Amino acid sequence: MDANGRWHIPDDPIVCLLRGDGIGRDVGTVPGISTCAVRVLDAAVEKAYKGKRHVHWFDIHAGDVAREMYFPQVKDEQVSALSEEDQRRLYLPDDSLKAFEYYGLGLKGPLTTPIGGGFRSINVYLRIRFDLYACVRPVRYFKGVEAPSKRADKVNMVIFRENTEDVYCGIEFKSGSDKAKRILAVLKEMGYNPMPSSGVGIKPISPEGTKRLVRMASASP
Image (cartoon, rainbow, N blue to C red; front, side, top):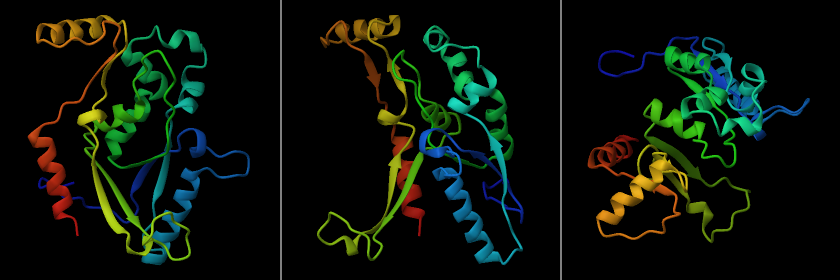
């Protein structure tokens, strides 16, 4: 990337591949969606560049796979007692984070978020850490595919969703926690009366964040 923020892509870029959990993982000889995505992308590059360019996939680890590799000694009942940063390292090791930072490009499959214990989503952490503020989703109809809408053939759009602010900023405090109690106390001083046992989630929305998302959508072809 140059000083103006423009990408200069070599003919053989190294792309971090984080296969993920669940449907992202291969099961025996059955490929997960990450492996399938790699096959599609490799085929597309081959088709477009006739062998002149290709992607080097660099496997890195996060989620359940990372925990099994790096911290097999940590039991499920011990996770909630860890600090937020140690929980992050459990499912997103520093080595994987450094690889993303160094190469600047990656493909990520779905990652698990342990249920209960106030665990912060690794997906949210990655979005905040690298300021991945836009979730860009092309949506179009493919002839022959069943769809519930009346005129599905007219669907052809790109959705730009906020990804780091609002409900996606990950500022959440578990019911009964010290931080939740402090926030509830401030709300009470302001004249609000939420239940004392409430968990708290904050969704800040800034003009700057909104405008840059709108600019990205407006500038896209």
